[in-house]
Length: 202
Image (tube, rainbow, N blue to C red; front, side, top):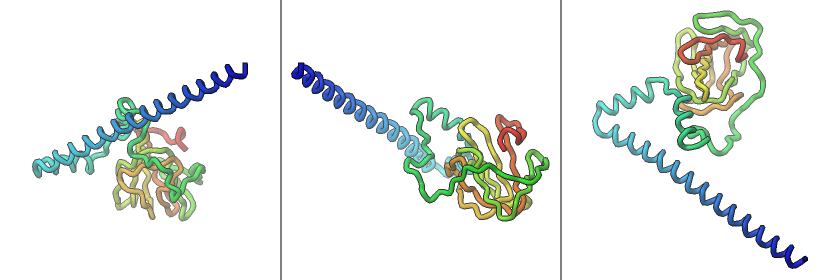
């Protein structure tokens, strides 16, 4: 009985090792394919740009001047290449400031398509959702404006920001520090070209 148990144990160990080896090979192959696809897209873009100056202008207009749909890109990537966000760092960045606190404000008033929140001076503004920065610009009225789109297609615009270090196409996590405001924060919520109320998100 003891001998048969040893044999069974050895067989189980060998099966486990084979399964682990098989999983590792599949994992490497899957990631190799994903890397090759990303490289092909990257090289294809470079070749397209180098063809002519018109191509370079068109590419710049599409990529840098328009708001790319992170939700569409994420869903396509997820559908064909698996659940891996290509924009997100695989290693955790320990230098990022991330908070679990919700935005606290004294009052809120409607303005244009968004809302002005009355907050304290030097108030630190954190991202309400994880997503990609699809737009960053300076505005006379709203100072620095940052738009973050999540994988569901929700776009949140943060206005009146100062001291912001996030860049266009940065991936930001929920609760990650975007910047600070001096007493007033401008927020806009939109999805599928419709402006939404703040109640669901604050």
